[in-house]
Structures are given as C-alpha cells and as structure tokens.
Amino acid sequence: MRKVVLYELLSLDGIAEEPGNWMFDVDQHVFDNLSRIISSQDAVLMGRGTYDYWVDYWPSSDIEPFASFINHTTKHVVTSSQPAKQWNDTVLVDAPVTDYVSGLKLQNGGDIGIHGSISLAQSLLEAGLVDELRLVITPTLAHDGRRLFDHKDALRRLTLLDAQSTPSGHLLLAYRPLPT
Image 1: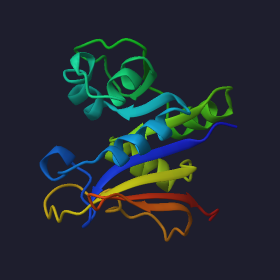
Image 2: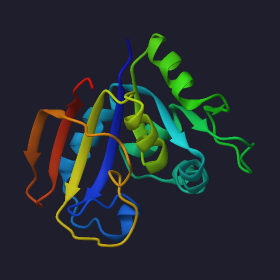
Image 3: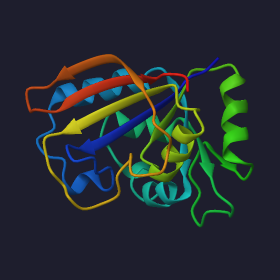
Image 4: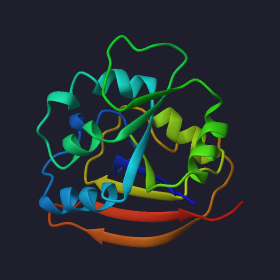
C-alpha cells in the first residue's frame, strides 16, 4: 500500500502559509532532505488554491530539486471546477477527497506527497489518511499566517522517525501518526 507523506515548511511558531515571507538562510541540507523525500513520490495531492498559485510559478522555475519533480509528477488537484490554466500531468479530483485518497493509496506506485495545501493537509490528517509527516521547522517566528495544526482535529499522537538539525538552524523532523 502506498503512503501519503505530508511535507510542510513551518515557522517555529507553526505558520505554514507563505514560507517565502519568513524562511531565510536555507542551506544545502534542507534541499538534500527535500530531494530524499520526493525521490520516493510519484504523485502529489494539492488543493485548488495551491494549484492556482503554483501553476504560474513552477512550470518556468529552475529551483531544484522541486521544479523538475513537480513539473513531471502527476498532480491530483482537489477542485469543483476547471482551472483557468492547464499544467501537464494534472488530474482533477471532484470526488469526495477521503474516498479518492483511500483508493489512490490502494493503487500500485510510490509515495503520494502533499506539499503546501494547508486545508487539504488538515482534512487528510483529520481523516487519518496521512502516513508520515515530514516537517521543516525554520528558526523564525512568523506570527502571521495560517497554521497547519490550527484546526479542531482530535488529540493525535505521533512517533518520531527522525530528527536532524542543519547548520543554518532548521529542524528536519519525521513523524508517523499512531492509530487512533
């Protein structure tokens, strides 16, 4: 069975929205970590807001390793309407997201990534469909913006899989949710 792996950039105070506004001094260790995570992924889940934001940026970006990955990986976009712009390898998801993701996990293939897409990530965490959390905590207090863990989900316990720090002070954390 395929794993759903949530990769999220977070400020120390838990902000996930607009990491370009508060994430500084990223070192090679952060990029190497991202490269390891995406190397096992052959599909990405994203919400419509993330799709609309990224479709104008990533197709012409040369920021690696993510640009090549996201531009050549199947993107499953949760939406109720046709996007204004097309992006190669995009599948529009108009079915109930929990049913769709449950079915996707049963198919053959690599890991399924969630990158950004805060609301989608929250709903899949709440539904118990996230198998692994890969978090990059940056040494910044952003104070303003949406938080990944700012929702009404039930108490959730996690098992630490890995923890590293980088020379620039970023924390690279990996967790597996325990069954509820």
